[in-house]
Image (tube, rainbow, N blue to C red; front, side, top):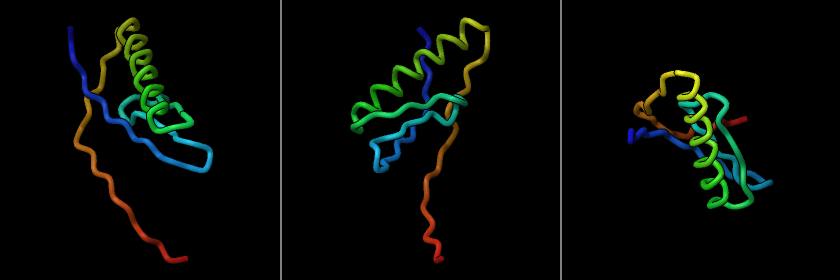
Length: 74
């Protein structure tokens, strides 16, 4: 069985949590809790990967990811 690593970003907003996988365009989901968002993105990634493999597409690998913040005065 092949193993692939994908990065996941989870953001909190006033409606809950939004999660996406930067390597897989269009692979995103949401959840009421952080844990639910993680479960949902795990499922979404699995489905996305299965679909790509069935179509004969290559799977991208996670590159080094940097996350930072900027304070902007307005």
